[in-house]
Amino acid sequence: MPIEPDTKDWTWVLRERCPECGFDPAAVDQGDLSQRIRDAAAAMHARLHGEAVRERPDEDTWSPLEYAAHVREVCSVMRARLDQMLTEDDPEFANWDQDQAAIDGDYAGQEPEHVAVELDLAAAELANAADAVPSDAWDRPGRRSNGSVFTVESLLVYALHDLEHHVWDVRAS
Image (cartoon, one colour):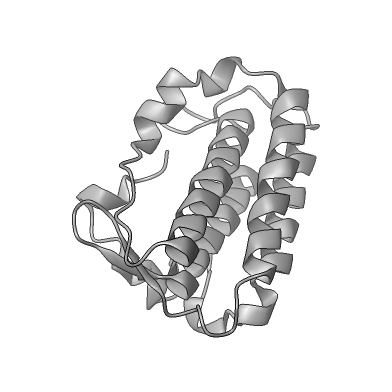
C-alpha cells in the first residue's frame, strides 16, 4: 500500500531515482509530463481487464483494482491542487488521507469497468491541465497543511512518480 507522505520524508522522490520502480525525477521533462500521465493511466487501465484484478498478492499489498482506484483519486486530487496553485497565491491544500480514502471509497468493492472509465477521465483531466500550464507558472507554490512546499512542476513530477510507481506495483504483482 502507498506510504502516507505526510508522515515520512517524501521529498526524496523529487531528488533521487526510486529504488523500487526506477523513476528518475531528473529525467522528467516538463514537455513529457502530460504524455507520461496518459501512458501510466493507460497501463493501469489495461491491468483492470486482466485476470485476478481483485486479488491481493498478500494481505499487505493492494490488488490491481485497489491500485487503479487509488491512481484515479491521485489524478483528481492533484488536478484540484494544480488548479488551486494556478488560481490562488500560495494555497494551502486540503488534507487528503489516502489510506482513509481507500477505506471510505471501498476501493476493493468497486467495479473494475467503472474504475477504468473514471481513471481514464481523471488522468485525461490532469494531463490536459498539465498541457495548459502557462510557461510563467511552473514555479508557482502551494503547500500541504504540514508546511511542505510544492511548485507546479514538483507537484506534477510527484504525481507522475505516484502513477508510474503504481503501474510498476501492479506489474510486479
